[in-house]
Image 1 (cartoon, helix red, strand yellow):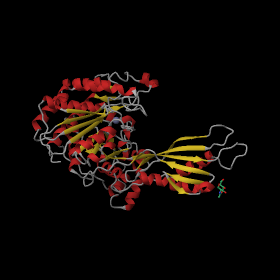
Image 2: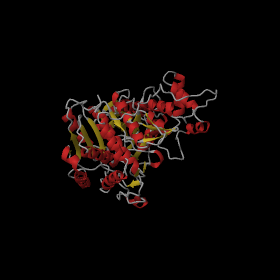
Image 3: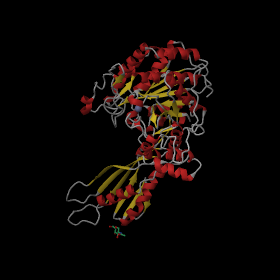
Image 4: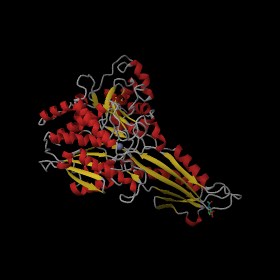
Length: 564
Ligand SMILES: *[C@@H]1O[C@H](CO)[C@@H](O)[C@H](O)[C@H]1NC(C)=O
Ligand SMILES: [Zn+2]
């Protein structure tokens, strides 16, 4: 993923010592969740966020039993580890602003990786049709026997975040060693997202060894520059897939996403049904230059500074709205997380029906900066520049304001809001205003200077995947099965909630292909099962990687026999 992997559940993934990151939660922990001041008990609310039963393949039940028994063996763990380790050892680093494929030499590392896949997964390459897009983008098609069924799509990306040269010696095991220490596989990409790509391919290779032939077509789409926005990889794959398969042609799409983690005393998986949008608004002030011995009251830098202060003081407010993905997630955790502070639990469980409860829940939940960032449109002034010489009036000053747009908002609402906020100041400073190519105030030639707003790159919030659907229920049941299969003797259970992420994935290029897009990786984020994503010492618990393979295998079989 392109930004913090960690953001996906409020409070998760906490290190063991900090069970929940909402400060408010800590007060509730000691008391236990079931006691409230009046002495009434707040039981787990099953009417809110009802849970699917684990879903086990029936038609292919015998095969599934055989495969999960295989997954449980040491031999299979070593095989899976070997596959992942080999993939990690081929660096496929993505840098910002890389040139086109064929021109920028840094893409070439992908060639070795693609060649490696062909030898590492012989049955996949003998059976599935492989289409290469923009040289390194990979579409594998596993043709099903019934062409009338909408296919399943599994996505992933095989590029990785670069290893910062200065941090190379902070890695316990070299970043591209793929070292297996008997418990963990270490190295850049071991989790994000070679575990996804190799997990999918290993699942299919084994299914082919067992002579499984799908009824429903399975399509794999692997990008190669997700870590820099996916423009060269998924950005080319998306249109090709749309051309080949048409709009709304996939039953379900699953791409990388957060794994499962502990929140308020229960384990939750949160398949992403939403992604925030984003936009950078450039705020540029231009004024006449001149010698600074005879200065005006405000230079362009002073004006810009006033504008920045005004924008920050009037940053969009996060508002918790009933039915939004962030709301659904908080409610589900409230319904099933026993350690949630009683006041918050009560408030969030009633927030759907009571305005007062909603306000209370909002006040409590938004104390957590992570949750607040999930709910609202954010504003961060990330770049500022202006002026060239200490004795010359600056003719130009520029600020870049980065917004991550709330799921229920839009690019237009966000950019217009900035423009409206700055109109009064612009008038005060005698600036004519051009916003996003449109002249808003035509003080024109009589103005002292200009304020120009522009937003060259925008991303709308993703369409929200509905969660009251057979596709969501199938995924939820599959997650619960994979989780339980991997820990037969334990009492632990997993709850599945609709989730969302603060970052983006390659799915942004595939919105037209399906209404049922999920970002979910089934990685174990409890007790350090995976970590170091985008930083030093990236690693994954080998057992967790095998569990991901069980997840993909179960998903493929469940979708194959479903009525989706
Ligand atoms: C705006 O600036 C222009 C150009 O410097 C000047 O002629 C005009 O009087 C100014 N208007 C106001 C209201 O200050
Ligand atoms: Zn990723």
